[in-house]
Length: 348
Image (cartoon, rainbow, N blue to C red; front, side, top):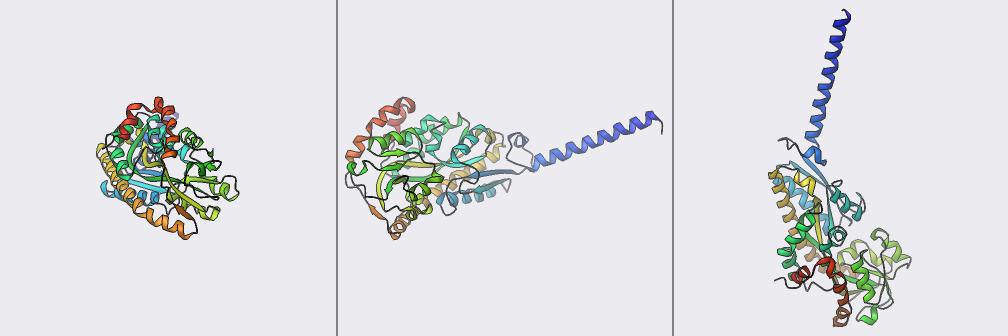
């Protein structure tokens, strides 16, 4: 073989290797999932694989709702969509995960609306104290026009709202005394959700609010770094706070928090239209299921709280507590918007 023929053969071999590499690379992209650039191809045989996480344990209604979501997504897409569910914050902290969804780094997350307020100011409307009367009012807000407006505002920030689930009404618990009045609140060092609406609300009620990370709360309660906290009954039981010295659970109902199933808007937009439809339907049905399940289980959680030796008390008159927190509305109205606040109050 002369030098010219050798060079010709070498070039052919190199071209063949490059062609094979291109085929292998395309195959990996076609079968993979989770990366926006990969999803854009919309290949007929492509399976989209998404990871969705949440902060609660596997026995929490969050997990049950997401397992249902995974099942429905597979059914409705003929297995072209696979959703992998991760509990207990194993994918990362909720705040970081929410930011990851916004930036297109993370796929999905089930979060409380409280987390979204950092990125979508309108979401803070859900954090206002005592703005929700009952579950019927909640559903009229989030399943109606207000829910649509909040979803649109989120999408503009790169966060696609796939469905509204149930986190629940929040109540105060502590180790020292039942809360029956504003006076009982005073001086309690309570862990509150780390946003300014919560901090301002609990300052107005006379407590000493601290924003301990949720993952560190059990230890903080056990070591008496904080006297108590505020959360839904499901959170209290699944996080085993009765084992951290908590003796009193008072039904303050000061805030309601919807669970929001969110997805990267970028990743959603890069899916084929038929799979967008399938995923949206699966999410809405799964969150309807999760919301119903959470409300059905709430009574059981309250009974379980009692069985742990924790005293539960209703509050006969919340008027003074509610009056004390009205200033929070004034403070946050410029950020949320007066019209949106009124729309929530008057939802029918």
